[in-house]
Image 1 (cartoon, rainbow, N blue to C red):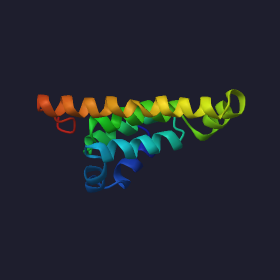
Image 2: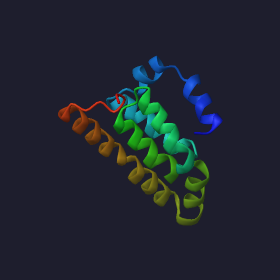
Image 3: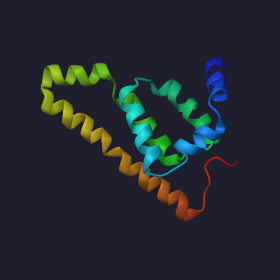
Length: 120
């Protein structure tokens, strides 16, 4: 793991992750908003998400961040709007946003199976 990831892992308190990203619609919605607005490649997002799961982030929120983060960013949305139109850009973001239901389903599956992603 790179030094920056280790720093991020220590900089974000475990209680913060558990309170805001520990599960439910709110945590999934937060990660959807962060993922859509923040461009981050999957190469760095995967180990970062793994460290956040270890601190208590829900699997559904992790899935949404892994899906929405690399797929969208302000530049991509702007270019889609410019070349394909605003309607296409809205449809693009809307379809990416639908992935939050997969995150909700994933959290539900973990809950029903009694699995905790943060415990070894």
